[in-house]
Amino acid sequence: MIIPYQQLQAETLQAICEDWLSRQAQEWLGDADEKQQAIEQVMQALKTKQLLITWDEEMNSLGMIPADQLDASE
Image 1 (cartoon, rainbow, N blue to C red):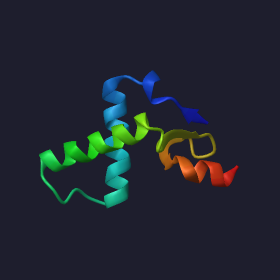
Image 2 (image 1 turned 30 degrees about the vertical axis):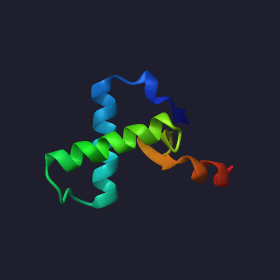
Image 3 (image 1 turned 180 degrees about the horizontal axis):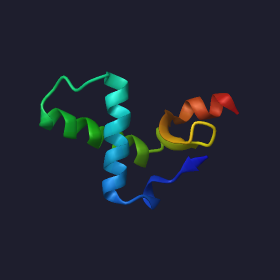
């Protein structure tokens, strides 16, 4: 299921972005400014629908996927 990012509270969206980025990079190698810049890039990708927030009922978890992966799986 796709979760519209606009329906999430700002703090929740920030936490989802941080979690997703940490799993992508395994750990933060940069400083706080680089982390915030990366989060802003993820937010922009959500706004332009390049990334989508998803809910996996089987795994009972939130995640993000590139929009083109969703199209390929359907």
